[in-house]
Amino acid sequence: MSTETGGSGRLPGVARPPETRREVYVKLVWIAMWLAFLGSPVADLAQGNHSVPGTVFASLGLTVFAGAYVGLVMRQTGRPLGRLGATVCLGLLPVLAVVLSLTLGAEWLVLFVYVSVAFGAVLPLHRSRPAIVGTTAVMVGVGLLLDTDPQYWLIVPALLGGFSMIGVRELVRTTRELREARAQVAQLAANEERLRLARDLHDLLGHSLSLITLKSELAGRMLPDHPEKAAGQVADIEQVSRQALVDVREAVTGYRRPRLTAELAGAQAALKAAGIEATMPSAVPELPETQESALAWSLREAVTNVVRHSGARRCSVDVTRRETLEGPVVELTVEDDGAGPSGASPGNGLTGLAERLAAVGGTLDTGTAGGHGFRLVARVPAVSVGSAA
Image (tube, rainbow, N blue to C red; front, top):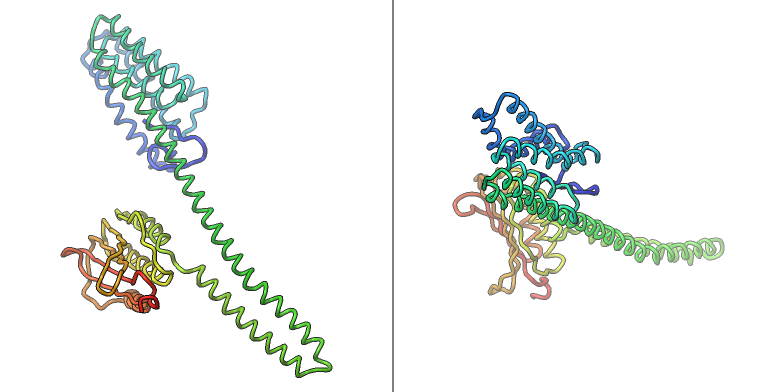
């Protein structure tokens, strides 16, 4: 049973159209699992309770019913079943459920559960609710006409199945909207960062280039008659240009400085892509830029090692503020359940990481995690080194 997504959003699982043949087969297998509830009608046919024409009619009706139901479900996963085909299937399912139940017996009342689920999965919200209740009422009425009472225990599956599909549809719609909102927030953040860089470069270069242009014009006018003054202007131009180059480098360095929150998001995506279950902190303590940058580089190096070398199935990341005798520190812990330390000397990555942490007054500890796996602990002061001094 799947749900309709609408729009152009793509979601995994039941809400995403199958894009490959393998995904189509997976969808069909999942749908077939639900068709196993048709065991009661199939058993009725297998027991030979009907004449040969009746058995042929029942088999044909059950096949058409199952095909219409699967067609509707596959339409919900994005397969090409047009509006006309969906309307025909929706009209065919309740008709077949009524006809087969009245002609073949109470064992076929379970078909109404599938009708209720189909209505909940396909019809608009304002129509699906009365359709589900109406389908359940028709099922009870047909059961009374058959002078039997199994329809009463089917009331709960019929109502529950239909309204559950409505809930799943609303959940999928909400999830799609949340993912679209997250994508928009990420896009807005990227745009804001580009605007920040553009503003910084404009502020840095606008004044410097204007000054260079002005002094160049002055030097040009002074050259014929006052070469000494022109040389002074050229020296000023060199000084201004060198300072502008330093300012641009600092602006670009600030633009490229890794942020801990961004690295956490990237680490989670990398671990997920590698098939590793990730546990991430819900919040990050505030840090000066240099300390935050050092922890961000530490997280990037640690997660890279986990993905490339550990063979782990789970990885947990924690960022905690602690009070120590030397003052408050922020501690980054990355722990996995993989192969653990190899026993060889630390590589260039961990060596460079220790040097980077030491430059901001931090430390790096590595070792096993509870007897197996690997644990990396990076600590930095929660205040700048100058403030701490």
